[in-house]
Length: 232
Image (cartoon, rainbow, N blue to C red; front, side, top):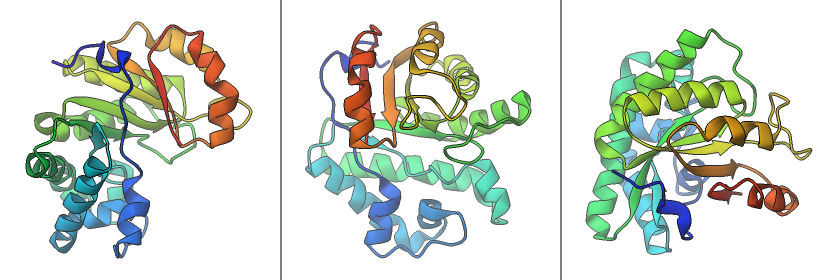
């Protein structure tokens, strides 16, 4: 079990897999984006190689490549029958990369916003819960912890954290904030972190934010008594 002290020392996460795969020749289909590489075995080695290059560049943690393999995207692109396969293969390919590297790296299972990115998901609570659970259970055999990947509201984070707590695997919370410091839901960083502290979290990351936003809100995070970081 990963300790809550994991991020007491600095850890380097990998970069964005989607853009990296596209730059290496991935042809995306519809809104599947990086998940296109999971459904087409031709691209599996591309995923492994991208993970390996992040590891060789100094990453302590790699994130599974299933950001776009969420239920809503799979349904939207008429490949929902491949949901389990896509999410499981994302875990398998990350594990293969770690084994090939022989490096002491951790694997974070991506649990992205289950609706649209950067927009608060106002759907029924049970539906969101089931979507998070379905993805988390596919990844569970392969990951050291879960990464809530660019989430836009406290409500969505809490739904996901109840799932990860039930599965007894800790989570790193990646929340998105706008340039004004508010989540897309209109909530503040302070409100969010106070809510998250009652769960088994490893820390909080400001996710998919600009360098200017990182600089502007670093002091706020320093005062919150929680391990924190950024994915620019």
